[in-house]
Length: 580
Figure 1 (tube, rainbow, N blue to C red):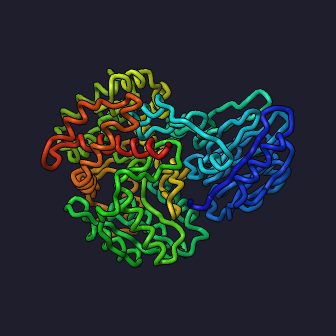
Figure 2: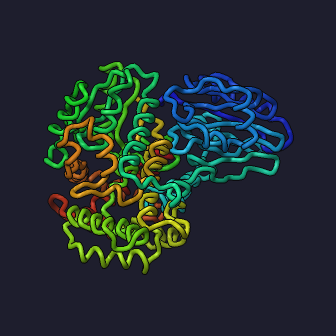
Figure 3: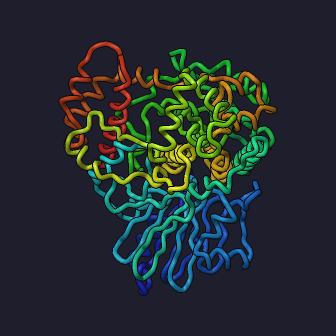
């Protein structure tokens, strides 16, 4: 366990908590510290930061005031009053961080989770008692037992990067970042307080390129320095790409001792040593290099066994093992990465950006500049892009499309997912431009990255680029400012050009673990076959065993990317098998 844990018990009627339920909760929370104990609300935690409480109010986790890099440890009476009266809304407006807050008033209790917060928040009912916990293990220790929800599992496989309140276990729901749970004698109601759509409105645009770059730079510096605060030593997963390089540059002024770790596969596409070394020299940190070890990966094992959905990818076992070993050697207590940077910095080469230009100013200089930049990146003719932009701007809905991953799924599974409602970040308000809608949609996988916490990880991993201040700043940047000749993520590149080597700022290539995943597939093909043909997914009727058997029977190395879908099924199968 990564150590950040809490368990809360809330009465959902006017009656006090039953003594027997209290005893069970205290036993489950035996390793935690009691923070609040009333007849209708009890809370235990082991958090080192951000425990601010008065009466029946508490905030667990890391809480930062806007503009501050120091975690709050106390709040004055005026702040508590504002938070309680707004039922937690003031927290999201005035603060940011990785927290779960509990506030009470005459009508009941409000539970609020930080937008993009990486402190887990699951809840389950036990009769007239609502349990809220940081991880599934605490609910299990309390005595809760949960069966797999076949329909939810089918939706998870089809849309693996979408997070909702639904989990793949019956009786367990998740409070998403930026959402609020209102608990009263009438039950528990869920609502959204924070949404990215609020930041893409036209009146919030930062249309000056220099000002946009400053806003992004300041937000990244703030987030990185705040999340690293209080940690003397950290291991930075330094791929050599732009995003981890930006995190490295921002860590330079934190006072945290940083060791860079670069991981190398057997194929050229994953070898980023030269770029990683270039970044390490520029920010003056030690760089260690290690290779991905196939022997560390077992497709039958899952890092998501104690999570309510299969979100852990088996190929990351090699990275997890090496990173934990290096962290122990260095005496580090956190791992930091540049995860989610592509999404937050809108690394998209979509014609929807040109559609935004058309809507904002027609066929003006801005449009043709963006069209030439996109043509350069995509090697597509400018006039072809212009025609596509016209179609995208006026002949199609601004909503991005996300087809489900249905390869190898059965007809039963396809029927289950047919009426799946799109993720709310794929449903733009009518006034939102197509490119802006595409940027918001890209945040759904980033949300999945930070909110789907791996409770079994021996070290806590922080992805500071996916934090509320950075996301809000980047959403205010017009889509066309993220493009420049030969460059995507142009605003981020401009913001950190003074801090990083020009070769890093200008590079177009990007490393990928696809070759390593293919090697795992080839090496463990028989184990994969044994797992999927006659496994739990097959028992649930979710996979087409005939198609899978045909795909797995083809001799020789993989020749297309269908193996990626099979590996996703393996992750789901390993998770389902661990729930027995």
